[in-house]
Length: 159
Image 1: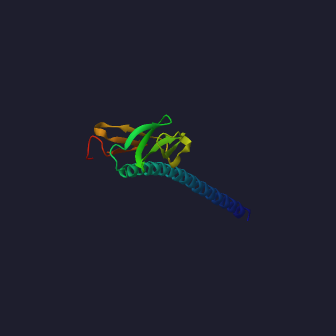
Image 2 (image 1 turned 90 degrees about the horizontal axis):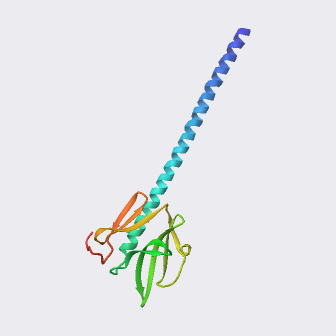
């Protein structure tokens, strides 16, 4: 009788050890999966912000009708993409710039003084830049994405 009780204890301990190993394995797989999911979510979110910003700029440029109304300038000492337009004889300017990790847009009458925080947040994005390239094209870089645009009135009429 004693021998059977000892065997049952060993069997019970063995089953508990196997159960603990299984539970720890499940926990490790869940933690690894959560880490992978978090990293993939961040990568997807960053790529989405870049794509959204590039699409936003492309749409803004394509909606401009006037020759020479899209150009690279500065706003409050920050590099900016500028869009000039005129309504009822008054000149207005829209500027798109990067400030505190966000793309901002500010629409105002030309000549008025504003600070960077006065704009409207468009999309949270780490960084982006504008550069004039050859043949009058404007290059927009946002993270790993880039866009070449041909504003109307540039030295090249076709893309």
